[in-house]
Amino acid sequence: MTSPIELDELDCDFKESVQESTPEANLDLCLTCGACTGGCPASELLDMDPRKLLRMVLLGMDDEVRKTPWAWVCTMCARCFKACPMKINIPKLVYSIRKSWPRDKAPKGIRGSCDQHIRTGNAMGVPSKDFIWVVEDVAEEIRENDPKFKDLQVTVDRKEAHFVINQNSREPVTEPDELGPLWKILHTVGADWTYPSVMWAGENYCLFLADEEGWKYILEEFVYHIDNNLGATVVVNTE
Amino acid sequence: MQKFNIPHNFEFTSIITLYAQWIKEGKLKVNSDWNRDLKIKFTLQDPCNIVRKTWGEKMADDLRFVIKTVVGEKNFVDMIPCGTNNFCCGGGGGALQAGLPEQRRAYGKVKFDQIMKTGANYVFAPCHNCHGQMEDIGEFYGGNYHVVHIWTIMCLAMGMLGENERSYLGPDLAEFGL
Image (cartoon, rainbow over all chains, first blue to last red; front, side, top):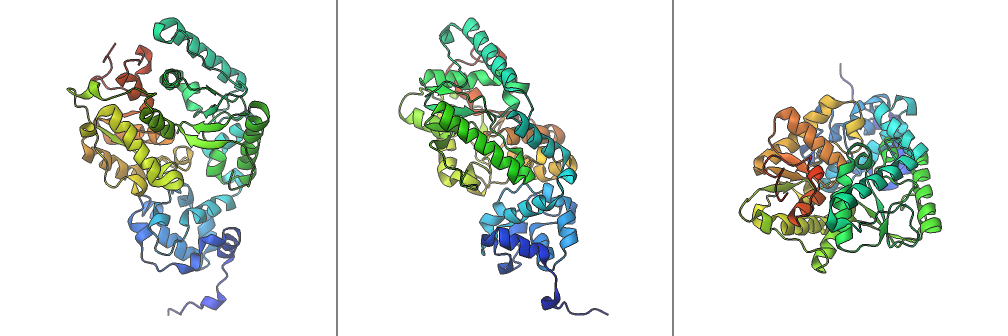
């Protein structure tokens, strides 16, 4: 025989922890309208969708919520959040679920990229000296092969440059020839720019891992380098 | 930086905003003459991070201004929906490295169908994750489009794209302007 759910007796620890850390999430306001789910490309994957996930949180199904690998299928793209008439922050909920995963159980690829970034300043784990070598090598090749760019200047850690540019580490590491076109554009407009040698990469897998300690460390190191060592006015991300 | 209240003395911007500014100021002299007769069609993936989640409509507008300047207004086809209401490609949030390729590709089918409906030969991907994901789903579902960085087509339009800087171009543009 079915019995009614006694709301007062539900144990909703996970919900409470999310509300505490992100008071703006307002999970209780859900009208179950499904606008989130209707416009979500991750709906139905692994038999889960945003509305269902939120229902499970509100019903105190904490074990299932904490374990669902759907938290890593959802990309936290925030389309659901934008559509929600009650402004419920589902991406933050998913982020909280990721954060609740033991670090060693989180997807290896994301964890590895976060670890590499903390250790080396980029998700590919390339030492800064190798990054600098690649940059100088590609620049030299362009200067030699293309008379229009015989004066092309590419620098790392040049003090007082106006712009500091972050680049996705896959570009210098796996497709260095993709660096040239951007440099040529910067050269053409006469931009005063440099790359940083510390935390030089544009990506951030610690954010995806919900590793706040790592994420904060990366940012602090980066900000310190820019403000104390370089003194740039503008930081530019290339993506 | 906002999240952790880290004080800093610099501004933060995107290269797209600078491209738009430089074109308007006349510093970046680029146009779509190269594509006037070729009429190659382009579409754009609005990256969730810089559009919906950070700079909103302003970034969506800057992207379109830059791209239309470079390929020609008539040769640009938007996906539906797009801009701040765009679908994520399915590669974001670390999904490319989450070890769930089957689900990632099922997610990406939405994007693949959107791209195919535009009939475009090229998709601009101003984000490396989007780039990787759209190439992967294109290959997986049998798409005939190419995924390109904005800087590639911008340099092509200005006649300064090197021979070794063309790995993402299709055969129609592989030797263009060399």
